[in-house]
Image 1: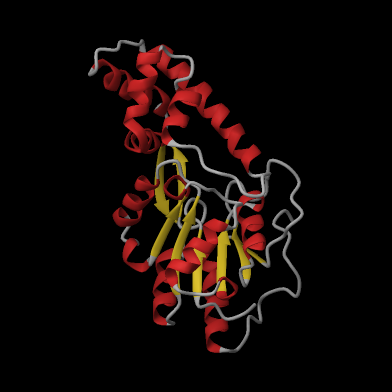
Image 2 (image 1 turned 135 degrees about the vertical axis):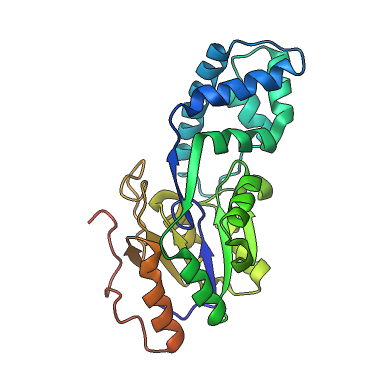
Length: 269
C-alpha cells in the first residue's frame, strides 16, 4: 500500500461504536409527543411509537437500496420526517416534526444509541498527527451535527481536519464524491489517501470508485453481513482500529507494510 498523506475515516464502526439503549423507542415517542404538544398537536405516545418503528424500518431498507446506486443522493431532513417517520400522521403533525429537522433527528439518535470510542482511535489520531498525515471523517449521516458533537464530547475533534456528512453535502456513500470532497478539503490527492470503513456495500465500494490509495476495513457489526453480494474487496481487514497502528507506522517509516497479506482480505473469512 502507498504511504498515505491522509486518512479518511468512516464514523460509526470505525471511530465510534454504539449499542442500542433499552426502552429507547418509548422515550423517543415521548419526545415527539412533547414536541407536537408544544404546537397544539396531540398524538398518543403509542401511535407515535408505532410510526417511529415503521418509519425507521422503511428508512433502513431505503439505505440498503441506495447502496446499490452508483451515485446516490441523500434524503433531506424533511423527507425523512414526512415520507418515512411521520408519513402516516396527520398533515399538521408531519409539518411540525419536519420543522424539527436535523436537531430533532439528532435527539432521537442520542436517545436510541449509546456511543463509545473504538479501541486504538486516540492512538491512531496521535500517530497520524505525529507523521504529518491529515485526517478526515466521511460518513453517511442523517444528522451530522450529532456526529460533530460526539467527536467533541469524546475528545477527538482536534485530531480531525475535515468532517463530511451526507446530510450536509446531499450525497451519500458509495457515491465517490463524498471521498473526493474530503480529500479536496485536506489538500491531498485522492490516490494518496487511505480510506477506512466498516461496510462492503457502502465503504469499500465508495473507496474503489473514488480511487483511493488503499481501502481498509475495521470489522464491526455490519462488516460480515452485507445486505447483498458485493464484488469489491478491501486491501486489509483488521478487527479494531488498533490494527491500523502498525500498518501506518510501517508505511510512514518506509519499511513497508510487512504484516499485510499479499492480496485483498475477505472480511467474511
